Image (tube, rainbow, N blue to C red; front, side):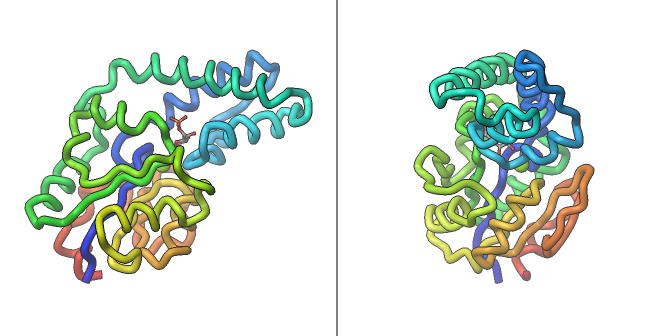
Length: 216
Ligand code: G6P
Ligand code: MG
């Protein structure tokens, strides 16, 4: 019997992956690096600085820049990304998410957000669901990013349950690995690539019922 839900944000609650992609693509182009959608898959669930490192390595420019230069670039990307977020609204919640969350609330099931995004509180406010969550893990306080399970363990702690008592929802392979590494039940929200190791795979959350998941 499960007692709580832990949600990733990008790709599970809303589709901001395409906005991250636009912002990274422009920044990479400025550096003379061309990235495509297939490469972008590798950035899902990966934190800001690690994403930049992956892009630089992909373009063969890993050792060309100082830490200060990298921090400036990451900030530039984020400023562009935040501009792109300005029009985000409840209509941008992924199909079935709000109904699923409402049903969880009706069952008194605590819900947490485990996202690597430092913009998560801002995005959740834009989507008008910020106050619906019982906890939002601050990624700035973590020692390791996904696929390390730390963020999921912290999310379970924040809603006062053991990881084994939680269901985690993820659209990124790194996230599914983190969920499984701490013994949570993993729901993979698949868009393009198949998610290995997921206990259950769906395209959208409207394929699931809260009652069914609590029995897992
Ligand atoms: C999520 C996204 C990643 C993004 C990361 C950090 O995990 O899937 O693409 O790089 O958050 O987001 P931030 O908003 O802090 O740059
Ligand atoms: Mg995601």
